[in-house]
Structures are given as C-alpha cells and as structure tokens.
Length: 367
Image (cartoon, rainbow, N blue to C red; front, side, top):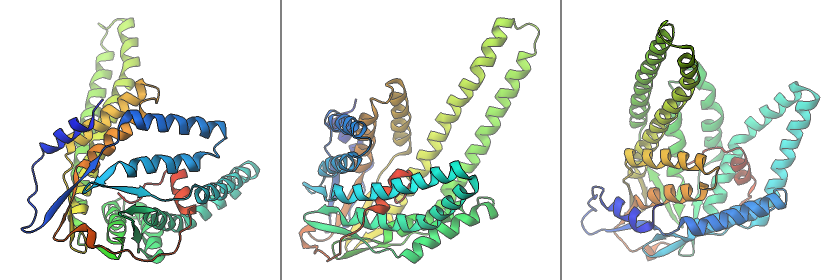
C-alpha cells in the first residue's frame, strides 16, 4: 500500500510547471489514509445493510466529509456540509420511482418502457440539481462553491446531443464530451468568483481519435491471435488434453487482454481531457494546473482492479484512497493574490434529489 509520503514523492518527480511571475502556486495535498477510510467504509457498509439502506444517506455524507476534510489547499481543509436528512428524502423519492418501474415491468413491459422514457426526460434535471447541490455543500474557508449552469443548457447536452450519437455513427461523441466538460468547468464559482473556460473541441477529437485508432489496431492483433490459435487447434499433432486446455484458456486470456487494453484507453482519455480542461479554466485571477501522467493513472487503475478482485472487495477503500490521492496531489492552483481575498456569494438551499438519483444510477458527470 502507498502512503502519503510515497505518493508525494512520486508526484514531485513530475516536471514542474512554472508559475507566472509574481504569482503564488498552491498544491492540493490529500492526507487521507487507507486504514482510516477502511474503518469508515466498513461501518457504513454494516449499518447500511443492517438498516436495509436507510443509513446510506448518512454513510455518503460521512465518507465525503472524510475525503473533503483531508484535502488541503494552502494548509486549509475543504468541508462537505450536506444534511443527511435531505439526501434521505431524496432516497425515498428515487426508491419510489424504482418501485414504479419494477411494478410496471412485471405488469406490462410496455409500461416499463414508458417509465424509462420519463426517466430519460427527467435525467438532465437530475444532473442539474446534483451539480448545484454538490457545489452548494462544498466549502473552503467558510465560503461555499456555487454552480451557475442553466437547466436549458443541461437539457441540450444530456437529452438532445445523445440522440445524435447513433445518427452520426459515434462521431459526435468527442464533441458531446467537450460540451459536458465545458458545462461543468465554466459554471462553477468559488464564492463570488465565477469560472471561465476557454477550451475547444479539437483536443477532445485528437484524444478520442488516437484512442480509436489504437483500438482498431489492437482488435486486429487480437483477432489475428485468435485465428492463429484456432488454426493451431486444428493441427492433428495437438493431443486432446492440450486442445481442451486451449479452448478453456482462450476466452480467459482474451478477456484479460481486453480488460488491460480498455483500462489503458480509459485512463489515456481521462488524463488527457482532465489536464486540458483544468489548463483552460480560470476563476477570477486563479489558474489551474493538472499534471496527471497516463502511465501512472493506468498502473493505479489496473492494480486497483486486481487488488479488489483478489480481496473480494475488501480493498475498495484502499483503491479509492490511492487513486484520489494521486489525482488531487497532481492538481495545483496559481494566483496573483491571496486566497483570503475571495468573498462569499449568497445562495438558497438546494434539493438533494438530483444528487441521489445520479449516484443511484451511477451517472458520471463532471470530471
């Protein structure tokens, strides 16, 4: 297992980015440990199962408060201020929606399709509310974050653009991802200092294009290897026992190779897009620098998957802390003025239903 000193040492080996003259550079530091988070995780799991899911709202808040509280910027921690009762009420609403879907599917599949269609229409609203809720409850130095994105723009991105994916044979996917990232990065603010985002879609097309070419090339190699193996199987010199071993091992080896490859592609896109988006984001006089390395991301993700599998899930907390530490320690903020000069903006309370729904359906939004 890694410790914070090892992670910081490895991140310090990355090429340093020179801050503009007269500016100060603040690196994020994540001080959480796998042992502490494991104790939180196992208690959360126990009480969530014991209460048939009722404790899930409190478990979520407890976990996030630990992660936020151990993320330091200029020596000061972040905080997560969500009220578990709000999330619990959202859980009840989302649970009721799932029950309606299950009953509809049991009674008539046509009705369940209608329920699913309604969910698709409501999805952008849930994402919009989730972003506002998370921002409102994220605090640094007693100043809340805020999300300014409009519901209209959210519907355009998450409802209408996905419809064009099959019509364009997937060619619009990089542009769709660009619009999603732009919606996230440009609409956040720290207090009264609102973000701006200067990114364009070109780097997204380059990242996805290279990943696509690599995929085609790799699939060709795998297909050639499979065909070669099948041709070898037909050789009369292979004994029956050897033939059975080849037939058993072939799908296992193919699956393992594909898992490794798609993990590499996923982390390549994530690293390239994340570094680019942070570099194109401003918050008043603040600039952001992300120094994620593809090979490091790939190694962490691949070994995390292996550790979770061989431990039957017990190393999930260790994997989460390990990846979180690397991503946060790779992010820095450059400012030409003190962080104390930022002021808060007044904002009304936010509903938690969007936060609950996007978590429940494991919808990836934001970064």
